Length: 219
Image (cartoon, rainbow, N blue to C red; front, side, top):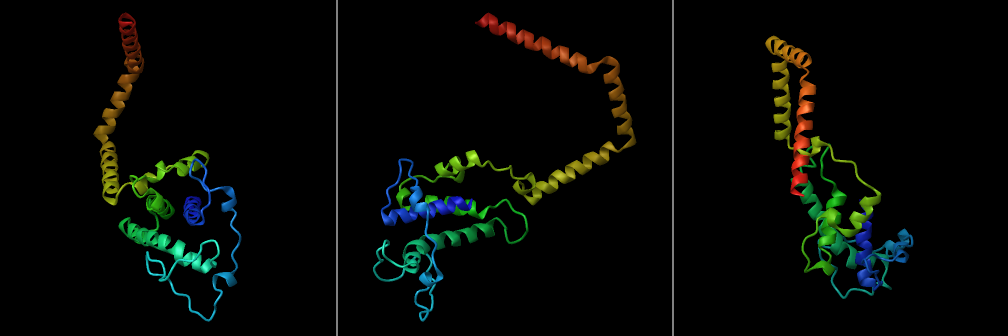
């Protein structure tokens, strides 16, 4: 899912750089081929201590030209004001999902951040909320890269899991009772002697035949 976040950042970058977009709203491949940034470019002024920008706010002053500014200025003015609020919302959602209380959880941070960035895009200001799996490029990606289903143990709460475990254990203890075992053996023998399986099979064949004849009469 990091592919989705990368895609959203490219779209955000294209918005400021004036990169033409295709009919589907995707960024051209040429913009995706980002040139590697050197550490000297990111921190061009070693004498100045790097300052993390305020959450959700760009640094004071006029924003620089996104086509001519340094990588550091571009990050401070155009990337961090968008990305940092998303990361803050990500941490809050992770706390709600109790991600810091256990090793396994159904919460996928990259999924949440992708959905958040997509819906907070200024170009979608007046549009309704779109869930992750309804985002166009996410659907296209999952067609070629389907996900395995999430285990049931991650989808249900601890209370629901305890109810299922207790229900199974009570049923197991009842089936272990000698009288219940005797009853089940008698039922099994009865089914074999009277051919209950064949009787039920013939019954459903007759029912299907009746339904078929009625449908023909209606036609």
